[in-house]
Length: 106
Image (tube, rainbow, N blue to C red; front, side, top):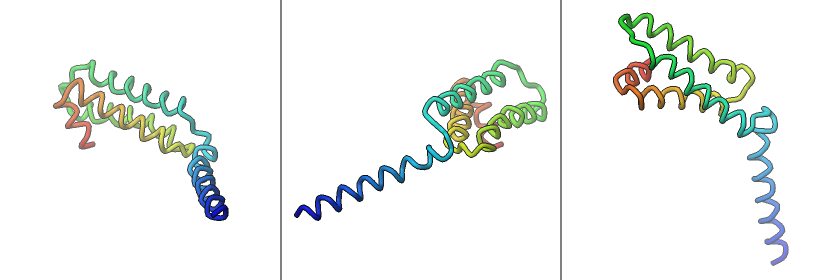
């Protein structure tokens, strides 16, 4: 019975260590993920606050704002990049659903 308890405990400990190793390798933490989310919201606000007569200019601005996501991708922080993109799209979609549909397609 003791062997089973020790084995299960060891498996749980290894699982926890394996789950934490990705964050430790990349140096990504909750603070950086939250900062990426805030940056995504700010990028979305720069698009929402303007009136767009030309869709090609809108497309270029969306691509320029989404390029900020590459900063996280380039250093291997996938969760921060995903957080940025999610906050960006959801903010645009919430504030202007029609514009949000356009941004989602890009």
